[in-house]
Image (cartoon, rainbow, N blue to C red; front, side):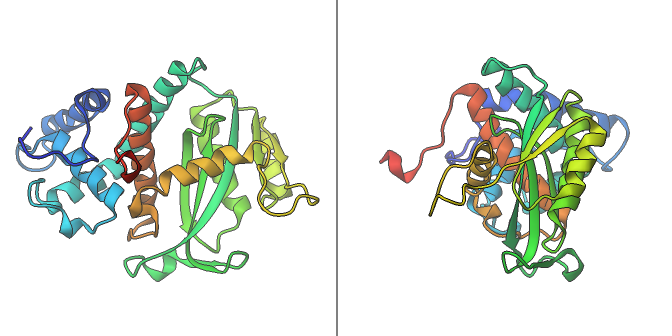
Amino acid sequence: MVERPAYPSDLSGARWALIAPRLTTWRQARTDAGIGGRTATHDLREIVNAILYVNRTGIAWRYLPHDFPPWQTVYGYFTAWTTDGIFTQLNYQLTGLVRTKAGRAVQTSACVIDTQSVKTSTNAPLPTQGIDAGKKIAGRKRGIITDTLGLLLAVVVTAASTSDNTIGIDLLNQAKTTHPILAKTWVDAGFKTKLIEHGATLGIDVEVVTKDPQVKGFSVVKRRWVVERTLGWIMQHRRLARDYEALPDNSASMIRIAMIDNLTKRVTDETTPTWRDT
């Protein structure tokens, strides 16, 4: 690793040790298969640090500081890891570690689903965008499913015009594949009968949780607050304040990266300094 002044988003040695084996195995497999055309020379930890820097600060790839590897190289690794499902695998692995640390089984039997519509930048092709008629937002919609600790199980990014039911069905299918004992999920009133019926075919009881109409203003809604808190966690990563990605799959990776950042800190009991610390 090249010696340089550290950025707040950099991985510590302990956090890097959690993800290094998967990334080094991936690169060695590509080298053995002759993929890439030449022997890779850039430090993998610095590649990850650069991706975390983009994710946390929200800058464009081309604006990466020059003490990181070239932005083209970093972006190349980002897209390759997205295509090969590396971020998905790391998220699953780290989620299991956090659940174990919290005294839970690696597999979860209950989950919570929610969606979030966000505006897009000019990078996003028009066919991947839409209008959320309910929230009056033109852009894309993020669907996430979490366990009862708020840890990410699956993510979907679509045009904002896509119905919550369609997104929810995709999320349940993904989550049931990786967590076969899933038997219960809580959703808001945006999810209708179609999702409930699909959940039944998977052996998952889908419960619609609504806000008490007698309560005015903000109130904590049973179970749903967990997934809403997770959306709050990922929004601390400025790359996610708006959808800047050209491809929806890249947008989903940015969400997974934000959670990987969160999960590695949970496992190692680390925090990121903020202005409040001063």
